[in-house]
Figure 1 (cartoon, rainbow, N blue to C red):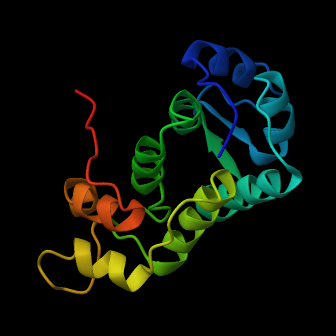
Figure 2 (cartoon, one colour; figure 1 turned 90 degrees about the vertical axis):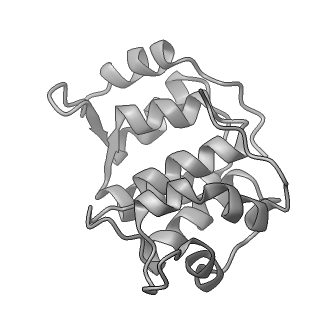
Length: 164
């Protein structure tokens, strides 16, 4: 589990906007600036975690880090439920409304890098639990709505707290 503190959005924004690859129009930066970004916000990580974080941004966001997603992750760094929710919503990289197995595996890999005790859920089970209309596909909207059920399977925890 990460030993990092929750990092306020304002602190993340200041560091993000000072990066050489910061794009003010899209509010993004390149994954090539991940190391200086994490250093600027004093984020503690192992080399293995850093490599997995790089892989995640490269595979799921084409090497681009959106400020909004990154800030939400840093503000929830010690909340596994919220981290999962943020990643699930952002992992639909092709924006077709479906989460495929490759996207799912990438998200599980980064969550395990962040917290090695994270319980692993098989993609097939994930889809079966979330596939309420039994079409064999997982829609992002259903994913969010049915998160409680899958979260219990994923972590063994009975509760998930929605932010109001």
